[in-house]
Structures are given as C-alpha cells and as structure tokens.
Length: 112
Image 1 (cartoon, one colour):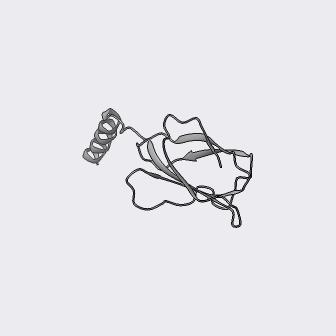
Image 2 (tube, helix red, strand yellow; image 1 turned 90 degrees about the vertical axis):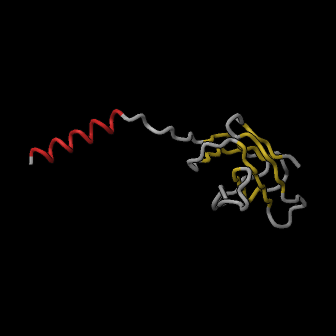
Image 3 (cartoon, helix red, strand yellow; image 1 turned 30 degrees about the vertical axis):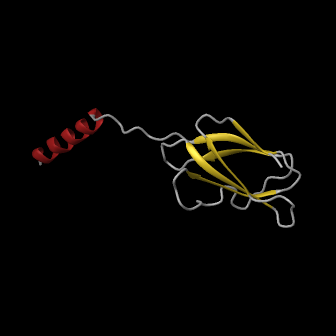
C-alpha cells in the first residue's frame, strides 16, 4: 500500500513539473455585413484543408449592415484561413471567398 501511495505521489509531482503543452488561442474578430443582402452562411477553414468545415453561423444569419463577433475555437495553432460567404437565395450577390490572417484580424467587412 505504501508503495502505491509513493507511486501516486511521484506521478502527481512529475506531472506538475513537466511544462504544459502550448494551447492554441481562440481566434476572435468582428464580422460586418457591408452588403444590402442577408449573409446566410459563413465558413472558415485553415489554408490547405480541402473541404469547408461546419457553417459558423449555424442557424443564425447576418443581416445587411449588421455585425457579430466571431470566435473560431478549433484548437489549431494556425492563422491563415480561407473564408466563404454565402448570401440568401434570390440575392444578386455571388458566393464570395477570401483568405485572411485571422490572428491579426480585429474586424472584417464583407462588401458587394
């Protein structure tokens, strides 16, 4: 029993001495819709990823002239992201794509 207790204490001490692995910080910025149409879907994937990840808006939309805070908490430690913006059906705006360094971005405005 003493041996088990010593082993458990040694494990806890060793774990507290080992430096913590650096964790990626969440990417946070304000997205502004500078168009006259409703933005229905927003996707962001790290550059080099072949598929778009889940729609960041989920069930939300971003109306013309509105803005919202976007948080990308995907656990990655990359900054360059491809972005895709889709507008409401019937809008005369085409799907738009862009690439940005989201680590340095405080605000992004999508224009017509």
